[in-house]
Length: 96
Ligand SMILES: [Zn+2]
Image (cartoon, rainbow, N blue to C red; front, side, top):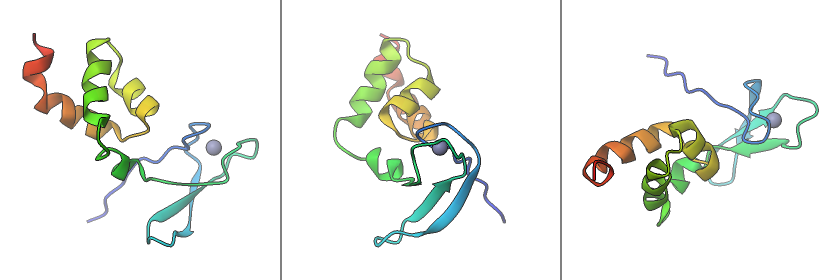
């Protein structure tokens, strides 16, 4: 079963992304195809970033300040699914 993950360039938001080998840690590296983009290669390590301390609290705080899910994901550089999952877990806090 093919699993498609939408990948966008963290700098220019372009969807024209090419795979560019693996990092030393074995994480997939991606290359932005946009010519005027400052980012040459990047990795999806926001997957790990979401587990850094304080991130979940920031997600909740941004939601309280009426930031959109996409805004929160972009600002914190994490996947929007992580934002959604975190907000679901913190529903009791948010309904206060
Ligand atoms: Zn780019």
